[in-house]
Length: 350
Image (cartoon, rainbow, N blue to C red; front, top):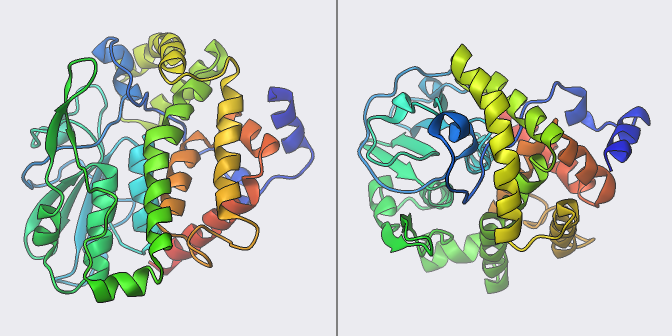
């Protein structure tokens, strides 16, 4: 399969995104546990929780919230660049043309989010007249989308519709969940306008949940599938992340070894096939089949929230062998190219 990926490149079939330098890799072992903080900090990126807004520091100005007119929505995203959940939020914000600032969080020390009692990313600080902190990628997307559509409620009121609920996992770990995080909080008229038929809303919610509950769990076992792939993944994580020299060295070499073995545990936990590529291929082909032959996107002529979620998860593999193999061995490429194009056009307008 690696040979197939190389053959794809050599055959001059490179789509536009492959002509650029690799931008992303997967840095989140979603759902994994254990490992040293120094070794595995780069590999963990989970959302959730609640807190209070505080001034953002050490900002990376990739999208400037200061460019927004006074009094409009101002956003700051705290992230790991290689986190699929953070990538989902960026895809959503970029597609909707919302300027925002990025703060790249050091995945080991996490000093950039010391203001928050919740220690995971993504965290979105939003100011639409009063400062708020939003956590959990799906809650962030649902709340901001509701705010963009509905003019009846303040962002603060909308966020209150997504209260965190503390639950305990099978491993005995306390986590926060949001039972309604895939819902947009719209009135009947707004719902009719956004979802002309009930099935459209049901479909979108189903596949947003699928992206969180299944697709994201296929990424780690695939990008850390072999020691060589694990090292390639961490090489990119260290280059793109906010690491010191010593931290970067340990994260790259020892973290790669640790994540290679953790990926095997994840493979067993999620009951994946011996060749985890097959699960990835089946998943993305299932997604393409759900879209069908007569729609450009699941949202029709334009992406919906499910399109943006799936795209956000998959694109963190760009530049890695797993991504090349997926492009060669599945039917995802046409849809993925269309997503790249609409995101690019939206970014140009900002």
